[in-house]
Image (cartoon, rainbow, N blue to C red; front, side, top):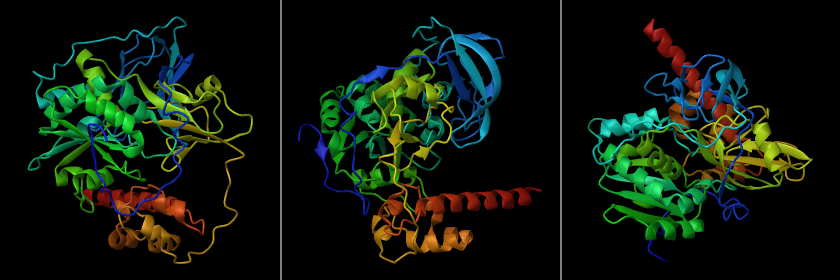
Length: 452
């Protein structure tokens, strides 16, 4: 068992999809080439888009500030490569809509050197200094949500953080980004934990890891710096254990209430790759310019974990790694919660954790969606004990308000477990995603009318 603690406890329900991790979990992180032209949307995180500071034709250095935070729930954007701002215009995004962004033409001889400013000493910095430093570095959650990290770390008045929970679960099939970060960037992770403990006021930290990454658990356990209050907890493999609410239940035995946040049960959860970036960037006053991305799937020739500059076009990435002639679908993120892309001209953003490519051989569409047979498989699979079957029927009749008011629709975090197990091929998670969008729009409209 090694130096870590193994816990048999886990959350209720969940599923066990095939993992498909063995093709990349043993491949070390490699630096990716600079694309000739990088495309940088200003809205690549939850919250307000960044505000442009540069002009067309301006030459910039790698690490230079291109755009400042557009508000509190926002982060700045730094140049991922030295080059020239070719133009400022609308750019394509993964959601299918156009969004304002920066086209940055890389200098042909651009190197890896990065501009630095005054670093932040974790020992002398105040919690407020650290939160500001994290925002200044442009750091968002690298697990996929891309929520500004400094906002997440701000403990509300009247609440206290008992445990800082570092999320190294990575339960999505195919993805091995966090696995490799834990094996290769342990020093950065522990430095990041020092900043995070001080920022949150937590007295201790727990690194949660699934049992299919015992080598990472062993490595981190053996390298915990003396005096740092960190333990490593290994939990059974199950999807979607990487969801912070599920991880809290598995590791801490506590359940986040409906509509609540982790801090309501004394926890703050931070992705392990995000933690490593904090530890890597803050001591040097740098901003984030690149991130580790798993590129894999049956349609990829040179699978691996790559350190890719933010803004690298997806088309360039696929050309560099090579793809099969019968390429059928490409996903950003994992197959369960990721997004199928319709345009290869979109670019890698801070929230891109994986690129999956599938061929015609793997993509099999259900010929028909059948009526619900009330088998209860979706109810047994839902990790937060919702009734997907009932909500699916309500969604079909557009009873969105009833779904939210009486069936806890907004608690659904769209893990896709219900759709995965449904024998009738009902796209339940897509129904719920659409329903939540309608509910949010209606709530925003009501708020706007109330403010008039």
